[in-house]
Amino acid sequence: MSTSMSSSPDHFIAPVHTPDIAPVPVTFLMCSPKLYDVNYVINPWMAGHVHDSSRTVAMAQWKRLYEAVTQLADVVLVEPQPGSPDMVFTANAGLEHNGVVVLSSFFHAERQGEERHFRRWFQQAGYTVLSLPRETPFEGEGDALFAVDGSRLWAGYGPRTSKSSHHYLSEAWKIEVASLHLIDERFYHLDTCFAPLEGGSVLYYPPAFDQASIMQIEDYYAANKRIVVTEADALRFACNVINIDRTVILNEVSRELSDQLKSNGFRVIEVQLSEFLKAGGAAKCLVMRLSGATH
Ligand code: ARG
Image 1 (spheres, rainbow, N blue to C red):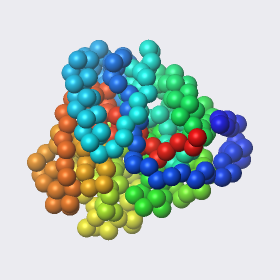
Image 2: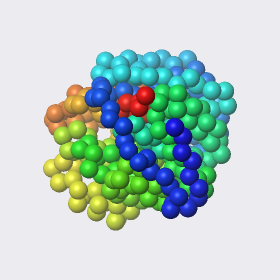
Image 3: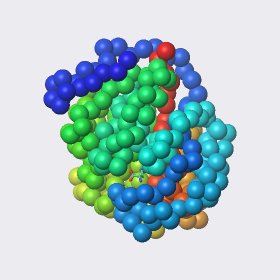
Protein backbone atom coordinates (compact mmCIF):
# COMPACT_ATOMS: atom_id res chain seq x y z
CA MET A 1 0.00 0.00 0.00
CA SER A 2 1.21 3.47 -0.71
CA THR A 3 -0.14 6.52 1.05
CA SER A 4 0.59 9.97 -0.25
CA MET A 5 0.16 12.96 1.93
CA SER A 6 -0.68 16.51 1.08
CA SER A 7 1.47 19.34 2.30
CA SER A 8 -0.43 19.91 5.54
CA PRO A 9 0.68 17.87 8.51
CA ASP A 10 -3.03 17.51 9.36
CA HIS A 11 -3.45 15.36 6.30
CA PHE A 12 -0.74 12.98 7.23
CA ILE A 13 -2.44 9.60 7.24
CA ALA A 14 -0.77 7.37 9.76
CA PRO A 15 -1.48 3.65 9.28
CA VAL A 16 -4.53 2.64 11.29
CA HIS A 17 -2.93 -0.56 12.40
CA THR A 18 0.50 -2.05 12.38
CA PRO A 19 0.43 -5.60 11.08
CA ASP A 20 1.76 -8.32 13.33
CA ILE A 21 5.22 -9.27 12.30
CA ALA A 22 6.84 -12.51 13.30
CA PRO A 23 10.24 -11.91 14.88
CA VAL A 24 12.85 -12.12 12.17
CA PRO A 25 16.61 -11.73 12.36
CA VAL A 26 17.76 -8.21 11.68
CA THR A 27 17.85 -7.51 7.97
CA PHE A 28 19.71 -4.78 6.15
CA LEU A 29 19.06 -3.28 2.75
CA MET A 30 22.18 -2.70 0.68
CA CYS A 31 22.90 -1.60 -2.90
CA SER A 32 25.93 -2.69 -4.89
CA PRO A 33 28.33 0.11 -5.95
CA LYS A 34 28.23 -1.15 -9.56
CA LEU A 35 27.11 2.36 -10.61
CA TYR A 36 28.69 4.31 -7.75
CA ASP A 37 30.55 7.53 -8.53
CA VAL A 38 31.08 11.02 -7.16
CA ASN A 39 29.23 12.97 -9.84
CA TYR A 40 28.31 16.19 -8.05
CA VAL A 41 29.02 18.07 -4.83
CA ILE A 42 26.21 18.17 -2.27
CA ASN A 43 28.33 17.94 0.88
CA PRO A 44 31.84 19.16 1.81
CA TRP A 45 33.30 15.65 1.52
CA MET A 46 32.53 15.46 -2.19
CA ALA A 47 34.37 18.69 -3.01
CA GLY A 48 37.55 17.86 -4.90
CA HIS A 49 36.46 14.26 -5.42
CA VAL A 50 34.26 14.45 -8.50
CA HIS A 51 35.07 11.31 -10.58
CA ASP A 52 37.97 10.68 -8.23
CA SER A 53 36.78 7.41 -6.69
CA SER A 54 37.77 4.02 -8.03
CA ARG A 55 34.81 1.77 -8.69
CA THR A 56 37.05 -1.29 -8.48
CA VAL A 57 38.33 -0.33 -5.04
CA ALA A 58 34.84 0.74 -3.96
CA MET A 59 33.48 -2.66 -5.01
CA ALA A 60 36.17 -4.50 -3.05
CA GLN A 61 35.53 -2.37 0.07
CA TRP A 62 31.76 -2.76 -0.23
CA LYS A 63 32.11 -6.55 -0.60
CA ARG A 64 34.12 -6.72 2.62
CA LEU A 65 31.42 -4.73 4.36
CA TYR A 66 28.74 -6.97 2.87
CA GLU A 67 30.56 -10.06 4.09
CA ALA A 68 30.96 -8.64 7.59
CA VAL A 69 27.25 -7.79 7.78
CA THR A 70 26.10 -11.16 6.39
CA GLN A 71 28.01 -12.94 9.17
CA LEU A 72 25.57 -11.40 11.63
CA ALA A 73 22.41 -10.46 9.76
CA ASP A 74 20.39 -11.01 6.61
CA VAL A 75 21.05 -8.68 3.69
CA VAL A 76 18.62 -7.88 0.90
CA LEU A 77 19.67 -5.93 -2.17
CA VAL A 78 18.14 -3.18 -4.25
CA GLU A 79 19.33 -2.92 -7.86
CA PRO A 80 21.44 0.21 -8.54
CA GLN A 81 19.94 2.52 -11.17
CA PRO A 82 21.62 4.64 -13.83
CA GLY A 83 21.67 8.31 -12.90
CA SER A 84 21.60 7.59 -9.14
CA PRO A 85 25.25 7.19 -8.13
CA ASP A 86 24.51 7.80 -4.42
CA MET A 87 21.93 5.00 -4.28
CA VAL A 88 24.59 2.84 -2.65
CA PHE A 89 23.86 4.86 0.53
CA THR A 90 20.66 2.98 1.33
CA ALA A 91 20.42 4.54 4.81
CA ASN A 92 18.91 7.47 2.93
CA ALA A 93 16.15 5.41 1.29
CA GLY A 94 13.80 6.10 4.17
CA LEU A 95 13.12 4.99 7.73
CA GLU A 96 11.40 1.69 8.50
CA HIS A 97 9.77 0.44 11.68
CA ASN A 98 7.14 -2.28 12.17
CA GLY A 99 6.59 -2.74 8.45
CA VAL A 100 6.01 0.97 7.79
CA VAL A 101 8.48 3.00 5.73
CA VAL A 102 8.56 6.77 5.64
CA LEU A 103 10.23 7.34 2.31
CA SER A 104 12.92 10.00 2.02
CA SER A 105 12.13 13.33 0.43
CA PHE A 106 15.62 14.38 -0.59
CA PHE A 107 16.77 17.94 -0.04
CA HIS A 108 18.97 17.99 -3.14
CA ALA A 109 17.55 17.49 -6.63
CA GLU A 110 20.59 15.31 -7.38
CA ARG A 111 19.18 12.55 -5.18
CA GLN A 112 15.44 12.98 -5.70
CA GLY A 113 15.52 10.52 -8.61
CA GLU A 114 16.29 7.74 -6.12
CA GLU A 115 12.93 8.10 -4.40
CA ARG A 116 10.90 6.25 -7.03
CA HIS A 117 13.37 3.36 -7.13
CA PHE A 118 13.29 2.93 -3.38
CA ARG A 119 9.50 3.35 -3.33
CA ARG A 120 9.11 0.54 -5.86
CA TRP A 121 11.45 -1.71 -3.90
CA PHE A 122 9.61 -1.19 -0.61
CA GLN A 123 6.20 -1.66 -2.22
CA GLN A 124 7.26 -4.86 -3.91
CA ALA A 125 8.69 -6.12 -0.62
CA GLY A 126 5.30 -5.55 1.03
CA TYR A 127 5.98 -2.51 3.20
CA THR A 128 3.46 0.21 3.85
CA VAL A 129 5.05 3.27 2.25
CA LEU A 130 4.33 6.78 3.48
CA SER A 131 5.57 9.86 1.62
CA LEU A 132 6.31 13.39 2.70
CA PRO A 133 5.58 16.51 0.69
CA ARG A 134 8.41 17.63 -1.60
CA GLU A 135 8.79 20.81 0.45
CA THR A 136 9.47 18.77 3.59
CA PRO A 137 12.96 17.30 3.22
CA PHE A 138 13.67 14.13 5.15
CA GLU A 139 16.67 11.88 4.48
CA GLY A 140 15.64 8.64 6.14
CA GLU A 141 17.77 6.70 8.53
CA GLY A 142 20.63 9.05 7.73
CA ASP A 143 18.82 11.56 9.94
CA ALA A 144 16.63 9.40 12.19
CA LEU A 145 17.77 6.71 14.60
CA PHE A 146 15.66 4.81 17.12
CA ALA A 147 16.91 4.53 20.68
CA VAL A 148 17.85 0.86 21.09
CA ASP A 149 14.94 0.23 23.47
CA GLY A 150 12.58 1.76 20.90
CA SER A 151 11.38 4.37 23.40
CA ARG A 152 12.09 7.36 21.21
CA LEU A 153 13.34 8.45 17.84
CA TRP A 154 16.37 10.71 17.62
CA ALA A 155 15.96 12.90 14.56
CA GLY A 156 18.47 15.35 13.10
CA TYR A 157 17.66 18.52 11.22
CA GLY A 158 19.53 21.39 9.61
CA PRO A 159 21.67 20.69 6.55
CA ARG A 160 19.28 18.17 4.95
CA THR A 161 16.22 17.07 6.90
CA SER A 162 13.81 19.82 7.92
CA LYS A 163 12.60 20.06 11.47
CA SER A 164 9.03 20.12 10.15
CA SER A 165 9.41 16.50 9.01
CA HIS A 166 9.78 15.32 12.60
CA HIS A 167 6.08 15.75 13.26
CA TYR A 168 5.31 13.27 10.48
CA LEU A 169 7.70 10.75 11.96
CA SER A 170 6.11 11.07 15.36
CA GLU A 171 2.68 10.50 13.77
CA ALA A 172 3.79 7.53 11.68
CA TRP A 173 4.78 5.43 14.67
CA LYS A 174 3.14 7.33 17.52
CA ILE A 175 6.56 7.83 19.01
CA GLU A 176 8.34 10.59 20.87
CA VAL A 177 10.80 12.37 18.61
CA ALA A 178 13.83 14.15 20.06
CA SER A 179 14.98 16.76 17.54
CA LEU A 180 18.72 17.38 17.33
CA HIS A 181 20.10 20.40 15.50
CA LEU A 182 23.13 19.68 13.31
CA ILE A 183 25.34 22.76 13.02
CA ASP A 184 28.50 21.57 11.24
CA GLU A 185 28.19 21.02 7.46
CA ARG A 186 30.76 18.23 7.61
CA PHE A 187 28.35 16.27 9.80
CA TYR A 188 25.30 16.88 7.67
CA HIS A 189 23.40 13.72 8.63
CA LEU A 190 22.71 12.54 12.17
CA ASP A 191 24.35 9.18 11.47
CA THR A 192 27.67 10.95 10.79
CA CYS A 193 27.94 12.15 14.40
CA PHE A 194 25.61 10.10 16.62
CA ALA A 195 24.96 6.40 17.21
CA PRO A 196 22.77 4.83 19.89
CA LEU A 197 24.37 1.48 20.81
CA GLU A 198 23.18 -1.81 22.29
CA GLY A 199 23.47 -1.85 26.04
CA GLY A 200 22.29 1.75 26.30
CA SER A 201 25.44 3.65 25.39
CA VAL A 202 25.90 6.31 22.75
CA LEU A 203 28.75 7.23 20.45
CA TYR A 204 28.74 10.92 19.47
CA TYR A 205 30.71 13.97 18.43
CA PRO A 206 29.37 16.85 20.55
CA PRO A 207 30.58 19.85 18.43
CA ALA A 208 28.31 18.70 15.59
CA PHE A 209 25.30 19.79 17.71
CA ASP A 210 23.99 22.99 19.20
CA GLN A 211 23.97 23.36 22.97
CA ALA A 212 20.30 22.48 23.43
CA SER A 213 20.80 19.24 21.49
CA ILE A 214 23.87 18.29 23.53
CA MET A 215 21.78 18.80 26.65
CA GLN A 216 19.08 16.48 25.34
CA ILE A 217 21.64 13.80 24.62
CA GLU A 218 23.28 14.22 28.00
CA ASP A 219 19.95 14.18 29.84
CA TYR A 220 19.10 10.86 28.24
CA TYR A 221 22.45 9.09 28.46
CA ALA A 222 24.25 8.92 31.81
CA ALA A 223 27.87 10.14 31.73
CA ASN A 224 29.24 6.59 31.93
CA LYS A 225 27.19 5.62 28.87
CA ARG A 226 28.56 8.34 26.60
CA ILE A 227 31.45 7.57 24.30
CA VAL A 228 32.70 10.93 23.07
CA VAL A 229 34.51 10.82 19.74
CA THR A 230 37.42 13.14 18.94
CA GLU A 231 37.34 15.35 15.85
CA ALA A 232 39.98 13.14 14.19
CA ASP A 233 37.82 10.04 14.67
CA ALA A 234 34.63 11.88 13.76
CA LEU A 235 36.35 12.78 10.47
CA ARG A 236 37.00 9.04 9.98
CA PHE A 237 33.22 8.54 10.26
CA ALA A 238 33.68 6.79 13.60
CA CYS A 239 30.07 7.50 14.61
CA ASN A 240 28.82 5.92 11.39
CA VAL A 241 28.58 2.43 12.86
CA ILE A 242 26.51 -0.61 12.06
CA ASN A 243 25.66 -2.06 15.47
CA ILE A 244 24.38 -5.64 15.58
CA ASP A 245 24.07 -6.94 19.13
CA ARG A 246 27.51 -6.51 20.68
CA THR A 247 29.35 -6.02 17.39
CA VAL A 248 30.13 -2.71 15.72
CA ILE A 249 31.21 -2.52 12.10
CA LEU A 250 32.83 0.74 11.05
CA ASN A 251 35.53 2.42 8.98
CA GLU A 252 39.09 2.31 10.30
CA VAL A 253 39.36 4.43 13.47
CA SER A 254 42.01 5.24 16.05
CA ARG A 255 43.41 2.54 18.29
CA GLU A 256 42.17 4.54 21.31
CA LEU A 257 38.57 4.49 20.11
CA SER A 258 38.55 0.85 19.13
CA ASP A 259 40.02 -0.02 22.57
CA GLN A 260 37.36 2.09 24.24
CA LEU A 261 34.61 0.32 22.31
CA LYS A 262 36.12 -3.03 23.26
CA SER A 263 36.28 -2.07 26.93
CA ASN A 264 32.59 -1.18 26.65
CA GLY A 265 31.94 -4.79 25.64
CA PHE A 266 31.84 -4.46 21.84
CA ARG A 267 33.51 -6.59 19.22
CA VAL A 268 34.96 -4.13 16.71
CA ILE A 269 35.16 -4.92 13.00
CA GLU A 270 36.96 -2.25 10.98
CA VAL A 271 36.47 -2.16 7.22
CA GLN A 272 38.39 0.32 5.08
CA LEU A 273 35.81 2.48 3.30
CA SER A 274 37.97 5.28 1.86
CA GLU A 275 36.20 5.33 -1.53
CA PHE A 276 32.86 6.04 0.13
CA LEU A 277 34.27 8.77 2.37
CA LYS A 278 34.87 10.69 -0.86
CA ALA A 279 31.09 10.93 -1.21
CA GLY A 280 30.59 11.66 2.50
CA GLY A 281 29.53 8.24 3.70
CA ALA A 282 30.83 5.14 5.47
CA ALA A 283 29.59 1.87 7.00
CA LYS A 284 26.23 2.90 8.44
CA CYS A 285 25.29 4.98 5.39
CA LEU A 286 25.70 1.87 3.24
CA VAL A 287 22.95 -0.08 5.01
CA MET A 288 19.35 0.47 6.04
CA ARG A 289 17.90 -1.55 8.91
CA LEU A 290 14.67 -3.41 8.16
CA SER A 291 12.46 -5.14 10.69
CA GLY A 292 10.37 -7.11 8.22
CA ALA A 293 7.79 -6.78 5.49
CA THR A 294 4.05 -7.01 5.86
CA HIS A 295 2.98 -9.41 3.13
N1 ARG B 1 26.76 11.69 -1.16
C1 ARG B 1 25.70 11.31 -0.29
C2 ARG B 1 24.91 12.56 0.09
O1 ARG B 1 25.49 13.60 0.23
C3 ARG B 1 26.22 10.61 0.93
C4 ARG B 1 25.15 10.09 1.84
C5 ARG B 1 25.67 9.51 3.12
N2 ARG B 1 24.62 8.91 3.85
C6 ARG B 1 24.42 8.97 5.17
N3 ARG B 1 23.46 8.26 5.67
N4 ARG B 1 25.08 9.79 5.94
O2 ARG B 1 23.71 12.54 0.25
